[in-house]
Image 1: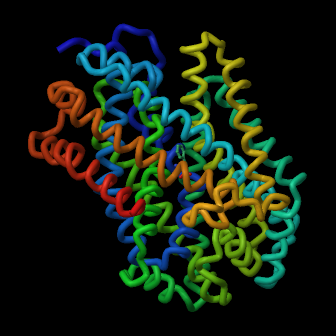
Image 2: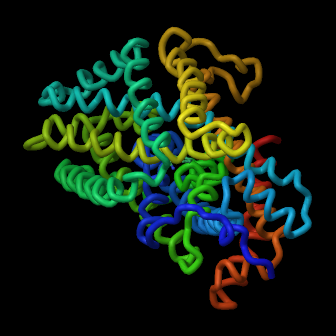
Amino acid sequence: MNESPSTSVKRGMWSSRLAFILAATGSAVGLGNIWKFPYITGENGGGAFVLVYLLCIAAVGVPIMMAEVLIGRRGGHSPVRSIQLITERDGANPAWRWLAAVGVLAAFLILSFYSVIGGWAMSYVGTAATGQLAGQTADEIGAIFTGLLGSPATLLLWHTVFMALVMLVVAKGVRFGLERAVSILMPALFVLLLLVVGYAMTTGFFGQAVAFLFQPDFSKLTTSGVLVALGHAFFTLSLGMAVMMAYGSYLPKNISIAKTSLTVSVMDTGVALLAGLAIFPIVFANGLEPGAGPGLIFQTLPLAFGQMPLGSLFGTLFFVLLVFAAWTSGISLLEPLVEWLEERKGMNRLMSTLTAGIACWAVGIASILSLNLWSDFAPLGMFGMFEGKTIFDLLDFFTANILLPLGGLMVAVFAGWVMTRETLEQELSMSPAAFSLWYRTLRYFAPVAVAVVFVYNLV
Ligand code: PHE
């Protein structure tokens, strides 16, 4: 076998296995876990949805994450270039590089609205710090949130600050400071989530929340719910858009791809489940609606902080950490496009960061307006399935439920059917039994599962 090209190119490497795990976890753990997972679980009826989601993580997400990291490390360059190098070497069709292009597009679109939600979290730092949550009723907390959505100027301000922070780090090169920041902030976020779970246990509704999350009632699960669960498995693990490929390209050769991918997935899932356990007891205790939609955490967690001792302090800390979690994910969303501009257009790091960041910021304005001035504007409303969906809803739907699974499907096919088995074995260096389990899942189960869910949703 040929040497991987990455060995012949001088390129920075993660300093250790832990460093990669931290960076990948920083990308994976974000708004998807704390903001999105609880609200889609609420909208899709709880237990059965959670079960399908967990299955998607284990049987589709983890194998595809391994494949993505492997492709990145094998290629040793930006995702587009890595795939091109692999196709050249393995004599495959160069059109496969479009696979990475789909990913770069998805990441760009996601960041445009992700930054807006990151802005919500930022605005809540101030709300909590100034004691505005203390002792408020559910209605008053709801009014704070409605007030935020109704103010395009405030949303724009925070969207701008969030995007600027992301650009700042990306312009300096992704690995700058990221490892250290994540190694402190992730555990801190975990502890604060545990604290809220502890509070949630005192509400008297913890049992009901556990039952809601873990007792599957399949009568509540719809085919579109299955698609949402699958799409979210990709979203939350940062898969299907070349992000893990980009990060994998910095992974030293002697590190186990399987173990690292598994660790990242377990931590990511743990944070999501904890968020669910923190939020649903508060939902039930206050007679709120589990299916309240994207505002769910902003209408529930503030209630907990308003009632618990030292709530303003913990609330502030919590939202600060949520902003950091969103920030590290945002960085990983901008990175693939910036790398691509550098390589393809020959721009320097600063110019490519500015170009990509500002473009993304501008697209984000459409999401801001669809929360207020354009809230009745449903561009694709003439198609039944998109009825009433705003630009923001459409972006979320199109990326998470279409582009990411499609990207993941292509990763599975590319790694499973195009790359040679020797290459894969060499990169993974696992026991033969484990390898064959992974290989089969990647070649057969994952692509078929994604295709079936797609077809069912189209007909
Ligand atoms: N995984 C991140 C989250 O759950 C979002 C993300 C998606 C980040 C895709 C990078 C790539 O919030």
